[in-house]
Length: 115
Image 1 (cartoon, rainbow, N blue to C red):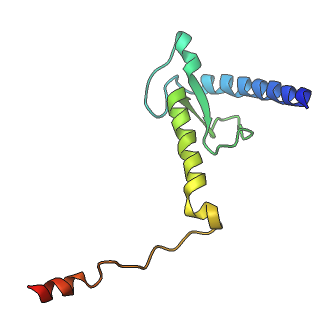
Image 2 (image 1 turned 90 degrees about the vertical axis):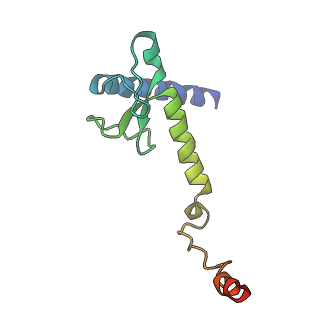
């Protein structure tokens, strides 16, 4: 099992290398969210983000990629995870209907009576 996991990690690393190199040739070295520029040693802080969150979807034109700094990339994945975990659709598979309970429905008439 350990050999299998090690091989999968090596394969993943090789894939990342190829699409990262292609993305760095296609796009300017600027974070797509915060706009920071990267060069030299700091270029390692610029990562490739898959817009559809599918790391196997690597079209040659780079349409599924954007370059994000490590901080914005982490933030993007955190937001995605929160959305997947906490959205009403994730629990039932359907959108939930908005609440129909109206706690202040009769308040206006009560206030008019008390005046």
